[in-house]
Amino acid sequence: MYLFTTAFLVLTTSTIQYVSSDCGCSTNRNTDCKNDLNPSHKYLKESNEIRDNNDELFSASNMVFLEKSTFEMGTNKPVFESDDEGPLRNVTLNSFYIDKYEVSNREFYDFVKETGYRTEAEIFGDSFLFEMCLPEEDRDKYQDLRAVQAPWWIKMKGVSWKHPEGPNSTIEDLMDHPVIHVSWNDAVKYCDYKGKRLPTEEEWEMACRAGLRQKLYPWGNKLTPKGQHWANIWQGEFPKSNTAEDGFVFTSPVDAFPPNKFGLYNMAGNVWEWTQDNWKNDPDTKVKKGGSFLCHESYCWRYRCAARSSNTKDSSASNLGFRCAADKIRS
Ligand SMILES: [Ca+2]
Ligand SMILES: [Ca+2]
Image (tube, rainbow, N blue to C red; front, side, top):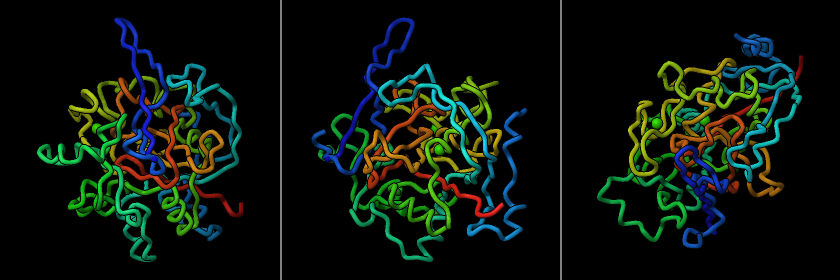
């Protein structure tokens, strides 16, 4: 049964109150549509110098090495309380590597070419497509395949990482965009192949915050400081009009927008990113972080570092990707 949950908003003259915690950005395969300056630099060391020692079992190219540190995780001002965004707490992590970028279509293409791997969306035969990927005249054809509480999601046959914006679409012009329509299981397989692993949620959030304390976003508290967009999210009225003031209606290249102070790109927005962790102790449901190009403050304000959401680990969708992490083998 596909499960869709929705954030219900109560709008008042002065505030937006989030009554329920879930955003409807979620697409879970095991439910049924119809039913429902930088202090941070002390942590940071470019990884290639370590790679040159041949100490690693993976390529640390395009990864950042973060030293053992303690950071403040979560928030005491949760927007979605039932997501368990809080409380604010100190977390100490050992050193680790993390990819600078979300995994791209080019990288995933090379993995598939080398291994013949088939994603779960290809095996199941479908994936969740955001309706605006389809031409307007085609959108009414798929009423039966829409999620009840989030009808902008269409469970579409033939959609996969190779056909990300509809069964007839290709990745030809999207090779530097993040791979999407990949499940948690697919992401784990890719990371394994690379000698890497998914980041834990704690690692992901520490990397997102980049040494800043109790800030909303990887760059600070203002969404568009000096009028500049720092992430690929939604502008306009969700889900019907996207003005794309940030330059992108759908995904952006993985190196678009400024990096955070750790040199990491698109931690907030563009695509959600899988983490290792179980959601509320359910081993079949995994935590995802960072929000996506579909997130808007009025509906799914989850492009904040403390925000979190989930999908079943076999789920895939237009706005869900990942990046890898890795451990230092020897010092
Ligand atoms: Ca956008
Ligand atoms: Ca992201």
